[in-house]
Amino acid sequence: MTTSPYRLLSRVPPIWLILIACTAFFSVFADSFFDIGNFTNILIQTSTIGLIALGMTVVMINGNIDLSVGAVVALAASLAVGLQADLGIWPAVLVGLGAGMALGFLNGMIVWKTGVDAFIVTLGAMMGVRGLVFLYTGEQSFFSMDFAYADFGMSSVAGVPTLAWIFLALTLVMHVVMTRTSHGRNAYAVGGNREAAENAGIRVGWHMVANFVVVGFFAALAGITLSTQMGASTPNLGTNYELWVITAVVLGGTKLTGGAGTILGTLGGVLTIGVLRNGMNLMQVPAFYVLVVMGVILIAVLLVDARINRREAGEVKL
Image (cartoon, rainbow, N blue to C red; front, side):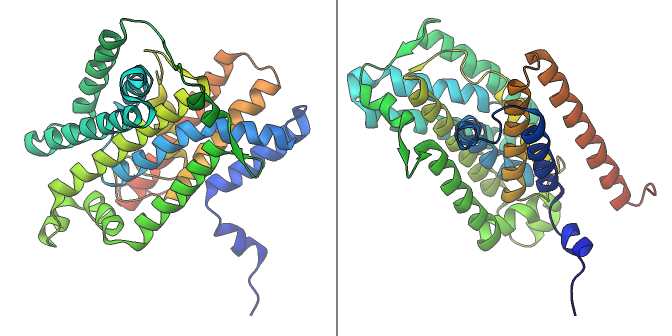
């Protein structure tokens, strides 16, 4: 028995079909888009957002959200660059990663113990941490005095940027975690029905805290890798990143209500945003139109998500 092309096509997640369509469109209408060097640029440009999106996917599947990731990017980068002169590169990097994980732990504990919505808790964290970054840096940029730091950000392996390898490798790791481990299964269970997950014996509170630590780690790692590309950090680093990340994750099929989503879908969402931004830049579309297009796409996806949720709840018929 043969499978029809239509049936095979229907099994492909929609975001990957959108990515293929966007790639085909810009290959025709944007000069130099289909060059290998340009695809390398897209991988570099998307690796930072992509790393954060990996952690955000887990948190959103769990039924929460983290708006403080952009501020954590700036905090980790500032610590990793600012402490190098006193501690050395690796200890400074570990301090930056530890700060991101500590903030994630704090966010998770507050959400768990107080019952306050994660949106509110992490919104407060976003503003507070950004203020701490400005206080620590004195509103000044930090520059790395060790060239090895910036050299790492510009390095490549087998012609592919090292940062892109890191992003792709961690994508594979998180895919395995979410599909092959009890932690991944518990994330879906908690996001789908928290009460049922508690009755099933899942330690929901600690599980939620662990996922906030995960997103804190990835946001800090993204900030540090971004600072290696520039050889510097600025207090404004990561501004609005939370919006790009949430857009990528939602585009990839993760529901805002939790309980559904995949790491591979998020990878598709991240690459789609990277292709759209890169293609429109090559077509010399003004930056504000790029934001308008992204905003329209996000609203359209949210509307579709809402309609699907209502259909599943049996409220309306499509």
